[in-house]
Length: 135
Image (tube, rainbow, N blue to C red; front, side, top):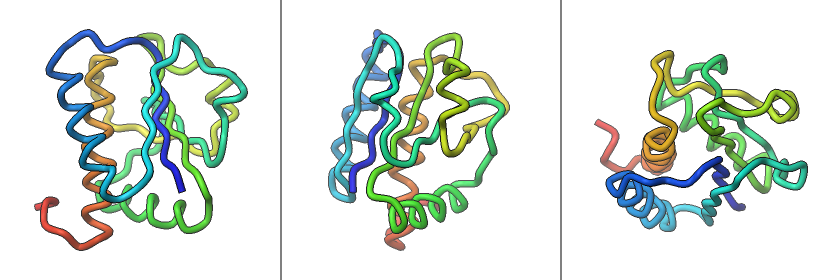
């Protein structure tokens, strides 16, 4: 099982790069994880169970997201998460996604969304393993 995060556009802020690196390292204890930065999405990116991060998607609590990860990893071999650029995810790829989730009704900088999402993904694995971190 592999979890892949595909995002549009490069990260320029060092503190965001550091956070991404930290959570990639932490996640490696729980799953095979791939992080790719792209200029744009393609049909070849739509592999496995595809989840688009979209402001109009379903909002989940951390516990609900952990349950979603647990259920989906049991049913599917791979999960691909999409994070769009400053203008979001192109509509054609939103339509192709199996699920759309929202991190918040608030607006965050595109770069920061990656770090926030990776922290929540890490938290989901910790919750599912009943390991301390969540509270």
